Length: 359
Image 1 (spheres, rainbow, N blue to C red):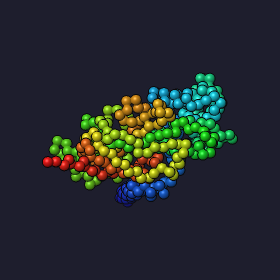
Image 2: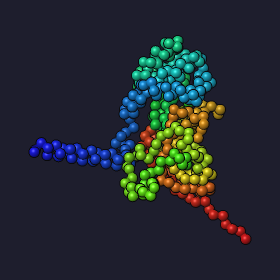
Image 3: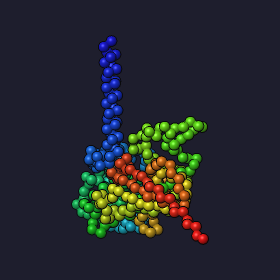
Image 4: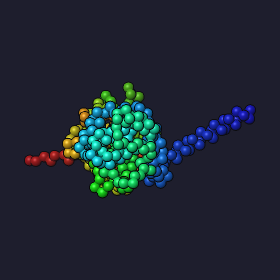
């Protein structure tokens, strides 16, 4: 009799402990400043995740098969890497960008990666007779050279632009290892957060917004999930978004030649005037990288030439309906740019002014 009692008591105790830890975790995640203090912006956990994710062939296949991505980098390297340049290829993966730089005549390319994919990169370089590439198995924060380099070549953009620690990693190399006047390729980025209407046939509302054949779910609004990840989703489906409610424009521009991570704003408020009426289903987060005026790379949801291996994020919001001329004032708060779970968003609606009758 005593053993079953002890077993039930232990199960209840551990269950209570798990619920308590989950509640504390939710409380912290919903307070970005507290989260930033408890989880400082060291890259330990992300390093491990990143190293595992890019070690396998599948992620590499997706990037290599992304034709807009590869065409963008091929053109950028052809235009801006010159014979004799010393180059760092940050996060080399299979070594394709390092190989393109070497074929342009770079005197030396340091191809660095902390993933085990580097073993295959070395094999590929030998098989393709690529010279002047030195593969270095390390994280960029631990990498150094005796002589500054001419170019930092990278592809550190995440779905949300910042979520692969692009700014921290690239600017660290910039400040330590790039020559004065040296080049970061690419360096110029536009960050978008655009109000959208989802195609009706693809829309998945919050559960409390549903009424299924007369079965009303609105009572569940009082039980809104506290997990931040419930409120955003990722997609690369060109049929998901029907239209932007307003004309897209970047809410943030970044130049890696000059930016520092501490300079990134933690609060952005922006206003959009509705030109395409309809239901507001959320905000699409995407980016555009620019090398020259005629050479750019987009992850936008309505860009038919978008680079498909990147997803765009949808920041979900409660349904709201907008007419032409209405305004949205949107507020985006960011605890840590690399961690979308610390982002919070809200909007205020201002209806278009009714025309005044004359006469």
